[in-house]
Each structure stands twice: as C-alpha cells, then as structure tokens.
Length: 85
Length: 85
Length: 154
Length: 154
Image 1 (cartoon, rainbow over the protein chains, first blue to last red):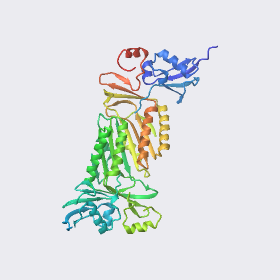
Image 2 (cartoon, one colour):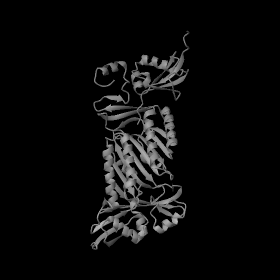
Image 3 (tube, rainbow over the protein chains, first blue to last red):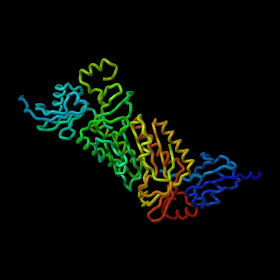
Image 4 (cartoon, one colour):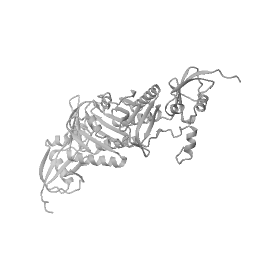
C-alpha cells in the first residue's frame, strides 16, 4: 500500500474547538482520505475532547458525511454541539 | 296558583340583539320566575331569532344559569354568540 | 393584565411592560383585521364588548394560564369600535423561563379569549352587506325563512 | 428572511416588515438572555456563529415552515457577540391567515433554529466560570479525567 498523496485543506474552528486548539483555523497538508480520518488526526494534534459522534462537519458551506472523501483545496468546518437561541 | 309578584329588571342588549330590538337596553316589569322564562318573554316581544341554547346570560356581572331565579332590581345581560379576536 | 382599548395600540410599549430578567422566552400573538373571511372580501370590522364582564373573564383566563404554564408575565388588550384592514384587534404577550411554556400559555390565552369573552365582531363586506360573526342562527324568524330558501346553511 | 446581527435589534421595525392585508394572525418569539440557567446565576452570554452555513440552513428552515404551515410572511434574526441579561438573542416573526398555523409555524422555526444552526452559546456565571452550552462532553481528555472524579455527569 502506497502513501496517499497529500491534500491541502483549510480548517475552521468554532467555540470549544477554537478554545482548545487556540486558533480560529489553519491550513494543513493531510494524507487523510475521509473526513473521519481527518478529524481523528486533528483530535490527536489538538487534544480535542469531543468524540466524533457529537460533531457535524461541513465542506465548502455544505453539511457532509464523515465518510465523504477529503478534497484538495477544500474548506472544512468542524461543528461542535450547537446552542442557538 | 296566584300570579307571581312583578319584579323590575334592567336588560342590556348587545350585537345582534341590540340590532333586532332596536335598543341598547330597557327596564321592564316581569312576572318571569327564572331567567329562562325571562328570555322566552323577551324573544317573543322583540322577535329574536336566537334560540336560548346559543345564548349565555349574566346577572350583576356574573355568568349565571338559565334556571336561576330572576331577582328584583337586578341587571341582566343577554350574551349572543361571541367572536373576539 | 387585561384591558379594552378604543384607540390603536402601541405594541412596543406593551412588549416593554413585560420585561423581566428571569424570562428567557417571550411569545406574542396579534390578531389583525384581514381582507377576507370564508371566501368573502371584508372591508372593515366592528367590535363591541361588555366591558366589565369581559375584563373579569379575561383576568380569570390570564390567571389560569399563569398557573398552568408557570408564566412570569402576561398581558392582553382587545380593541373595540370600527377597525380597518390591517389594524390590530387583539394583542397577547407572555413571558416564561422557557419557550414551551411561553408558546402554550400564549395559545391558551388567545383560544380562551376568543371562546369566552363577551365580545362581538361584525364583518362588513365589499358588496355592502354585513354579518355578526358566529351568528348564523341569529337572524329573526322572518330572516331565517328567507335564508332557508337560499343555498346557505341557516 | 434570515440574518445574523451584531447590534441590538429593533423589534418594531421587524414586526412592521411582516405587514400584509391577507394576514389575520401574527406570532412572534423572542429569546431573551435570562439571569439563570439550570440553577446557576448567569451574568452574560457570548454567541458565535458560522455566518454562511447558518444563513443557508436557516433559509431552509424558513421555507420548510412556509410549506408546512402555509405562512404568509416569516423572518428570523439571531444576535452574535456578547449579550447582557435581558438582551434579545433571537427573534422570530410569522404571519398566517389563521392563528393555528401562525403558532405552529413560529414554534417550528425556533425549534429547528436551535437544533440545526451552527451557532454556539457560552454562558458566563456569577462565580467567574464559563461553559459552552450543550457541551458537557467537550472538554479535553485531561479535563474529562478531572470531571470524572467529581459528582457531575461527564
């Protein structure tokens, strides 16, 4: 099995994820194939407490499934539990 | 059976009853014993179309039963079907 | 808590009067005079009320709503007189800690106000005729006879 | 239809924007910052939103409500930033021909707004601490370890 080619992804962090990472976002090179794998890497890197099940994810302003593939030069938003109103 | 003593009652008419009687109210002498009998008399006198079942009645600012007795010098309000709001 | 108004209402003042730092939810209902009812074009409404009976019954309704839904603040105002299309006929405002209670309390109040208050509404139609609402059986016997020969329900 | 505001809202202007002669019922909901939550004294709130995602999801919600309840007009505004006790955090206003649709439509909108929009709320408490709402499991593993030795649910 060969190493997957790296993709460039822009991540945005909100609320508790912004606090825990200490940054509003970052642009990274990743070998993650799915959004699920991407979150596992970011969780490890920033010591995020949130399990994946409690998050939603959006790519380029559309809500997406964790099994969707990571696309090169996409904008990924990690969405912790919401509480509007 | 002797004739019941007459009582003096002030009647107030609203909405359709005011239109059909042509007056906002009147003070009458009545031999009616119950409020039910009183309405039967007034219905006859003013040719009211409304059956008693579709009306409510109040005496001295309290909702009352049609079987309640007519009291001397009381104020009776006949309440046709309501439609607030 | 409840009042009957002969002039147009200042909704903003009414809303501000319910201000409370314990309240997390505010729900208001307004009844507006609309330009049609049951397929007929309406040009204006006329409201008539029995003032003292309406006030005492409305205050009973508001206290029932307070008890059932734990409302923090609540208020209701009903207009009387002639109202044009678009005018505000009735206003209900409530607050509660949470939204479920506020919605249910506000709905309870307007439902009961409409069903129980001695207030009457006459619709005036574009064709020049008029009718007391909810009063299909109100016409005098002569009128009922005339109506029975038509197609409408008596 | 939906917008995010960084300044306080003029409810009166919002309400007037829904004016329509076909409408017989207007229902509005306001979420106010209250001075307590789950037994703790709250001093202020902080709201954060993902602007573009929140707007597109809210417009979906509003159109769902329009279709389901036959609303005539509808609008929603959500505040972001730091809000003091008593301030207006979210406003929803709808109109319909009749009151049942207006109440149900307004309730649907605020329920879905709260559940689906990428908006986050941080509560600041009188004791100086703070917490992201609905985020009991948000703390990092070290914090979870600390919490597990206490009495609170993780």
